[in-house]
Image (cartoon, rainbow, N blue to C red):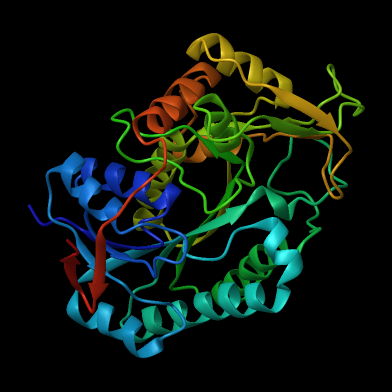
Length: 353
């Protein structure tokens, strides 16, 4: 049996690492590109440990066209799942040019290399941020799009690039996946979310407070038009999200065209819902303080995932309780996240000490 080889850009990141495990479980071979700007080399060893498979890895930046082509030349890649890119909304507001340069140029370089090597099967990681602030939930794929920050704008522009590409070359098969709010971790507790510095997202902040790394959570506003005054979001377990990519990949290999899918649960939970659920399933208290609203936060945002169910046969299976339990297991087993005593030179791993 010949296994299809999939290139995963950003494969050592939070979502990428869980995706790689599911791809290996699904019978694919994988090649990972990651520049380690927002990920850890330790993740690679943990992926090998969980999967009991060898994994080909390149510490490569998508801004380096020569290195990208080298990856394609050295591997019989059949399809690409593109996750690599800068992703912090707040940082994107401070450094918009950095985000546009990296996220737009990275995609263009990848597409040019794919085209040169006659690889035209792509699954692209987009975001619910493309729905902006004016659409009412549940959010559907056919809504008018807008953005409120440079990060979201890079995702929207990437979608436009992919649509324009297919319009001029219908040999491509492209699936665009709009993520909602990934949380949770692998059931082993060996891989999970390990943000740099102060977390931007709710769940890693909760888990860090729960183990004593931080004193409390700040809740930005309790005067929204929701049932408890706090913002409502669609949280999806990262493993469910990863499995959605496999379903999209199956469709990608079996048909041409460009398709867009929401990957969410279709249900919204408030900030207080998440905190209370976490406290209940982990028996840990999570102190919080209500502060003023954050600019750009919408009151309610959740998906309509029915298109993914109808066309891909995919739906989220895990509950909010599962998300909280798995996120805490990861954090409790890894109180300081990934800790590494390794560094890389080229594609060789060296240990220090």
